[in-house]
Length: 186
Image (cartoon, rainbow, N blue to C red; front, side):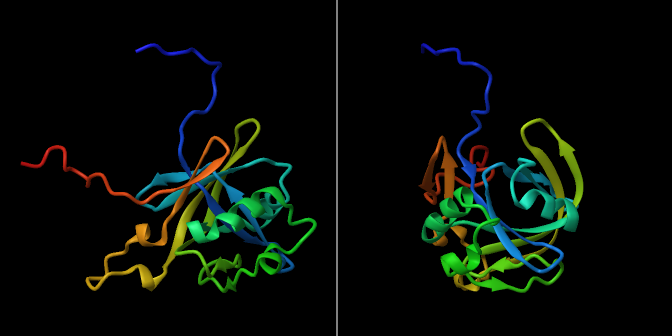
């Protein structure tokens, strides 16, 4: 197989694309789309998001130390894109998109009601990395939409048609091709 050599860059694709909701100290809500997000630790449950310091939500994250990660779906794709290209400095994204802001249990940032999973997060560390700063956060509460639970109470995110981001495009995922450990089962 022939391969081309490219300049160093991030080629870890596809990525989960999430909407991160925040609330400033005055209670004004905003949503920022993040593709630089991931799982960091199981115990305690921790995630990371990376944000450019010039983004409107950056000082809100710094000031409040909390946010909510809202998973995205095919149905939310337009909102995901919109929240990534429009600034909260200029508009109320919840109102503009007709999204439902729900009260969280542990943080002041709102949940996005239309998201199938919402993770309330409290920031434990901010790491300046260059173009982005990484916010490491502990997940302090998780909300899962019950319409994606089967009769045995197993959660099926694939029923919500989650989306991912890859090189400037959004894709629906959901086809199962295996299960954990299937390659070594006898």
